[in-house]
Length: 200
Image (tube, rainbow, N blue to C red):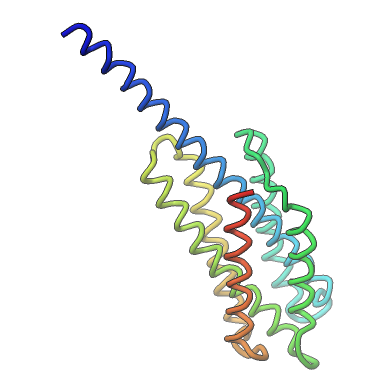
C-alpha cells in the first residue's frame, strides 16, 4: 500500500510539471507571434502613412497607427517580462510590413491608393482578429485565472483590430482594384507569417 502511494505522488508531480511546461510554452508562443504581428502592423500603417499622409485618409491611418504603437509597446514589455523568445524573423517582418503598407497605398490609378490601403487593412485585421480569438480560446482552456492579465490585453487588442477592420470597410476598401483577389492574397500571406512566427 505504502509503495503504491509512493509511486502515485511522483506521477502527480510530473503531471503538474507537464501542465506547467505546456502552459509556459503556450504563453511563450502567444507573446512571440503577437509581438511579431504587432511589429508588422506598426510597419504596415507606417508605410501607408508615408504615401497617404497628406491625403484625406491620412488622419484615419494615423489614428489606427497610434493603436498599433500601443500594441507593439505592450508586447515589447511582455517579451521581457515573460522572458519569451522573439521570432528570428523580426527583421523580415519589419521590411515586409512597410512594403505591404506602402505598396497597397500606391496600388491602382490616382485616387485608388486609399482603397488599396483600406483593403490591406481589412485583410490583415480580419486575420489578426481571428488569430486573437483563437488565442483567447487556448488561454481559457489552459487556465483563465492564471492568464487573466494576458487575456485582458488580447481581448482589448482584438477589439481594436476589429475596429480597424470596420474602419477599412467604411473607407471604401471594397472599391480597391481586384478587391477579392487582393485581400485573399494578403490573408494567405498573413496566415503564413503567423504560422512561421509561432515556430521560429
